[in-house]
Length: 165
Image (cartoon, rainbow, N blue to C red):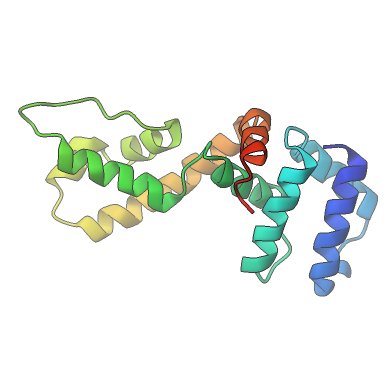
């Protein structure tokens, strides 16, 4: 995404949240920042993510939120609910007698590790507490992954398949 693309995307975002316009001191600098943060995402894919954000949020998005939406839509990073479902499926389907390694995207593995691992989750008697702890750890891991990941390939694939609209 170029600075000009980012400026156009940002103009739509600011126009959609008029209260935010007063807080934007330097629109050119803001557009350069958005372009730097979203440089690996095609404009059409970022527009889809902004459209999703506009439909679901009362607040002006940050580039990080746009990246999260692109990651979710592309399948590069599963949603929190999808990630928890992977964990639960593995716990239900794999026994102590026939252990199978837990295979999942890295943010899911990181979150499972942060809450003590699959064995701890399997033995736990507090599923709601586990879900909350996992959700907190997963949001951090997914956010970190989206900051560190080049989403171009995943985003291009999602756009080509027409997902995320």
